[in-house]
Image 1: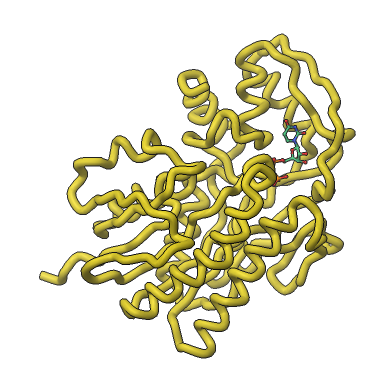
Image 2 (image 1 turned 90 degrees about the vertical axis):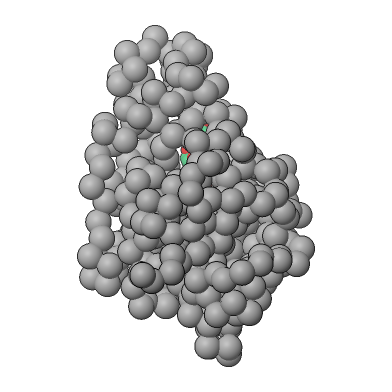
Length: 313
Ligand code: UDP
């Protein structure tokens, strides 16, 4: 019988990392989950402890990473990922995207493992092309408050391609667009948990700016499926994974109030600096090379997400 494959997931106790660990275990892989728990949480992976083939290692991946034994895949998901997290943790955000990616690449190279980088739609910044195809180079302010995340991820893509071209490392890059689902952190400031928690508590929903900026929300199961397909493909250039169903933040607030039958009002607050005005993935490439498209509607994705926040806020 073939030996089981073994994957390292950095940031494995985070929102996406924990869902990814679960999927990999479900696919029959052994999983080493690594996290320094600054934004991740053991509660996200509690249910995986004791599962055959699952181990957790507490470690900051900006320092040398040691993993004993074989590794077939290194999936680098460690990073603060919500605007308020990376504003609070600017240096850690820059370090994990740069030094952490370097360490994770070095580990993949030494093990002969395939490397997958969790990149982001923030590579496109406040985009001047809409929707955003992978061929668009972006409109990022390097010295603005979001620059610490955007530029770290852009560096991470550059060093990943350098390892691919120069060392022949087998690499994949996924550009992740706004994703939601259970295990987001209630206080992480992102629009989905914030609006759901505010509506559940009867508090006003805080819409930033005029609320006419747009986002496109992908349910976590769809996203993880796209990542799994990318990992198993041979496509080494970046691939957008996200849901093209675009809506304004104001319409999203109204939708949350409607779905919850909430009595909450909407209040308007100042727009954060460099907040992208539009965002929608062009997923032509993912459809073509991965045969992937999102399947979960907003209504079907919101139901389990709301249920989660009833008990986790
Ligand atoms: N937003 C909002 N109210 C909130 C939190 C966020 O109106 O309480 C807006 C934010 O300004 C942005 C969008 O919702 O335009 C998505 O913000 P999020 O922090 O979820 O992530 P981003 O897509 O900006 O990285």
